[in-house]
Image 1: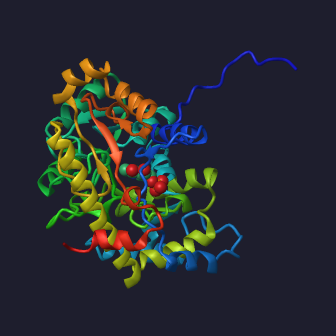
Image 2 (image 1 turned 180 degrees about the horizontal axis):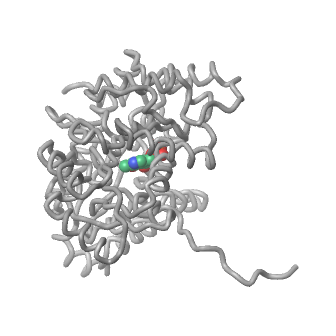
Length: 403
Ligand code: PLP
């Protein structure tokens, strides 16, 4: 054998998956671990969904790159019922929304503006396509949307360096903060995007898990339909992340159609078509039969109860923490406890703290730095199953019922 003279391009494991692996390693060593890193709902998969998947397990052929007609029609109906009238031809399916987002960035071929903090993969994916992510802080308490007042300057500075900025990504509601930006902020973001000639990518994977009362997701697709792409998936609301199925809704008009063709070109070179049995199950899910609607309602109540309780404990301990409005994340900023953490544990950064939590206490969480946050924040997912075990339906149900 002859050793190679070059090293592969270093591509680190995505922070969420890296924590997952570290937790699994600890488990194999016989250490009792609490996995609060990976973004999983931790609720059981609904048996009706399993039934649909099994019914289609014999489908082995490749399908259309954009997804089956049945799935595209069902996803179009799902969005139309949420105030976003959608033609099935605007829908593209893929093996999860993560690859769809990657295909979009590859098709847009330029830099993207993301919120600080924002989901780990936006910046990492941009860099894999040879682009840069421009980080812009959010309005206080409104995670997921770059502050519209700061956007023009940030884009102007990147363009002055010769960068081609093509899009701004928003997360509604947000991961990691679990908050939902206001309609006013989203409207202003859309106006700024229009002025700056940017596409708006609206990642709405947590849309159906908003549990703060009276809050509705203000999709930019309502305010800037000609330039907004919306993505979602079954991974979070139906806890089917491992089944890998996501959908994107491309913008109206000639630009939207051209972008769709480019996304399909990328898709055709990477995944060809989404898994056929899963497309069948997803068509059923996006049609929103009553049993699944009830299941999502129930899990939303569970997430509200658990995230609220954990956030309260952090607040009582002196951390700065927004009350979670959606999903299953709690994102405390431990800045106010900095002195105590340094003195008692020798901890200086959020990455030091997550290392300590894993090594000494077997708790896997993510540091704010993984999300591009300079604050000493931690992101933890606090799924109901952590309290009661994945199979304890009865206690999960009891937790969800109103007190
Ligand atoms: N977007 C956000 C904000 C997420 O948190 C995740 C999952 O962690 C995804 C997208 C990707 O999910 P999937 O590829 O399972 O659709």
